Image (cartoon, rainbow, N blue to C red; front, side, top):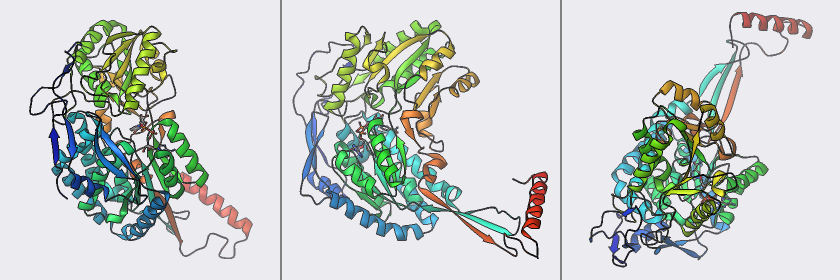
Length: 550
Ligand code: NAD
């Protein structure tokens, strides 16, 4: 496949507002004007979109948040196309499931290398489609490489058949097999469009499944590049089908046909997906929203905590399920910490460009910008104080919003308990740690938590009291997110099931136990009456327990 030809041209020159706020734009270089818009080579786009099953004749325009410029027209799938995608996937899955585990693992390891080799093309496309800063896009191929290597190297550990003890020692042999579910439907969001399109599907493929993927309409190209890379890594092409269309239409069409659904998105949509799965009695894993707490304890290293808090709250402009929107800071260090946190936030460089150099990029859509404005305006109208930020920045890009720190947020404000999914964090003082834990556990979500402290054992003990699927000590989210051997997911309304680790692959399998009875049957033999057989069995059970048998 041809490498991306990104044609860049300046859209308008620097008639931006003077830098009236504390924030500055990304490094200005006339060759790389941060307000430039970008156009994709048509042949490149065609090569990607040909990977879709989409014959409806309808297309939808995808626009880049950088300058709100048209990027591509994406052919749309009808329900018939979804049906066709499943038909192809099912056929491909049958032979894939029979292929040796080593063959499947080797394809994952080839994908690892490809993703690293093609990193700059992947980053360009992610930045163009999502508007995020390149350093935040960088997390995506890294996460996929880590995931591919981990599952490629541990395939046998998770998927090999194993012998377990039978009811009669020596006489009953039991083999437990891991069979693939069949065809897995993967429904993914726009915020991490490359990694979210792939990271769950990789263990599904490893386990012998096929995938029908429905990425978010805003970021189809990144997801299609992911599919192309799978082809190049040597996965059978029909094994990974991609369909495009409105979530409310095409999403349920997947739920109606899949053998398992892996959904990442909002809690509201997750609930409706779970209802559809329940009606069909198929399993699902749901990676949903969060309102994640960060605790800065009195013994935290203030400089490290302030640096970490900036990344925890503003990575990908806060459009990250595991980013921090609630910050609880010990009274003793509140003023010192907040001073450093505000200063570091004000020093961030903002800009819309696909090059390295910006600390934060754009929000991905007008809808996200509207939500952020609504949450901040509502909080301010009800008495919250803005310590920094609090404004959209149309001078930098149409969907830009400043990284924002609020104080004095109260329960009647929308952003107190509702996920903003933007660069907005509310800071609160706490007096004792039990109170901080109780406030961190308040609300319906339980996705990710963070604790800053110089006392590791104390922080880890506190972490166990936080009702979140992951808790990071002296990091915001990257330590758990990058540690792909560790399961990751949400408690309470933040989800069901886990991605990553053993659970991340076993969810895509059915266990099958094959029990073989030898020599004697499990019924009275050797002339024993039923009663005598019962007595012998009862005595045997007592003996086996005495022998320490499980
Ligand atoms: P969303 O729920 O609106 O959309 C997510 C996906 O679901 C999209 O592909 C969409 O087209 C599809 N969809 C929409 N309606 C559907 C329906 N009725 N049936 C089936 N599919 C449907 O979510 P969003 O607002 O685009 O994404 C942001 C949300 O995702 C945030 O709440 C964020 O916290 C969450 N998220 C969670 C994780 C995680 O791992 N926990 C990761 C990324 C994002």
